View 1 (tube, rainbow, N blue to C red):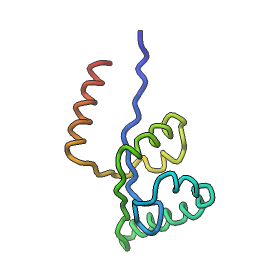
View 2: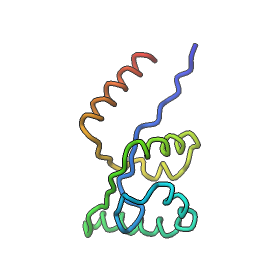
View 3: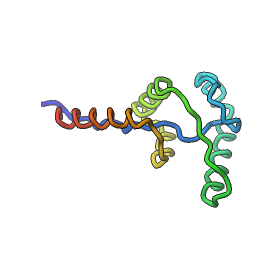
Length: 113
């Protein structure tokens, strides 16, 4: 009898980490400075959230290849990182073709369970 382990839902970052909004900065570069910039990131995120709630600014977005994000998200989910929950209700835009593939895969997973 195999145990069914719930699969993490697929999420992508919907807001940029930096104020510049550029996606050309590699994720490894962002990770290198992450420890020193944690308070700064939290402050900018809080400010963006307040601005979004009051309707005074447009949300910033970054386009990043899926291949760079998925391994990081899987690792964060497996290690039960708390910051991942901070983004649990954020909306994410994905290509319609990818969405259809994900739905088909989900159905296959449910049938296999």
